[in-house]
Length: 222
Image 1 (cartoon, rainbow, N blue to C red):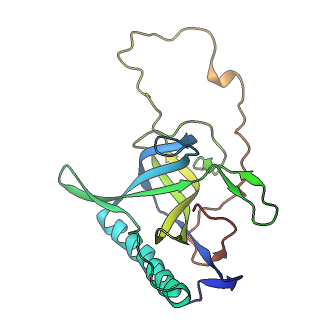
Image 2: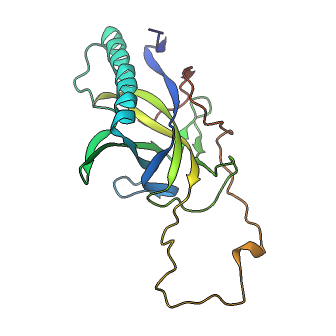
Image 3: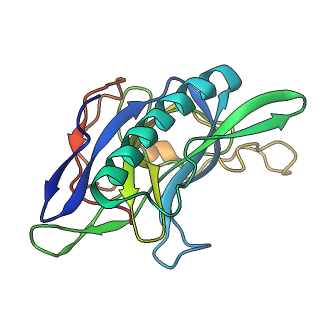
């Protein structure tokens, strides 16, 4: 297999392996603001659901990256004390098995060159790859772009799914149903009266095409 890292000042520098899913289903999303329920800084994240067949394929790919990484860490640093499992979790939903995966992104990272904190957020794009502002609700059909990011800390060794972007194919809005509210259409303000612009992101445009080439890691989540 390809060498996954370069030694630099006795530090293991992993490479990030990009992935783009086919159409999957959003389960939980925190794409407009970080989820801080378990962490002060929080994470942008998406939990998405795949069929059992598709999930097995992705799990196999992620675990192959983990195996190569653990072998490299063991060779250079010694066997890790703890190896965290990676990939998705098998779920049973109404008798149908599926896999849930979680991809996440820190809202900022420290630049290796300047030491400055650099803000970042995932791109959220519509089907035509145009930036969008709408909150992506549970049940939306999406494609997810992420990078498999190996890590090694004093506590554990593993591979995490670092979120890059989400392409929304079929949007389910939060509280999208207007039936049973007791309202009727009136003349007045319409969201079509003015154009809104998407917030700027620090990420470059993505094509969301499946790729296999690896790129050097410039920052880590850990």
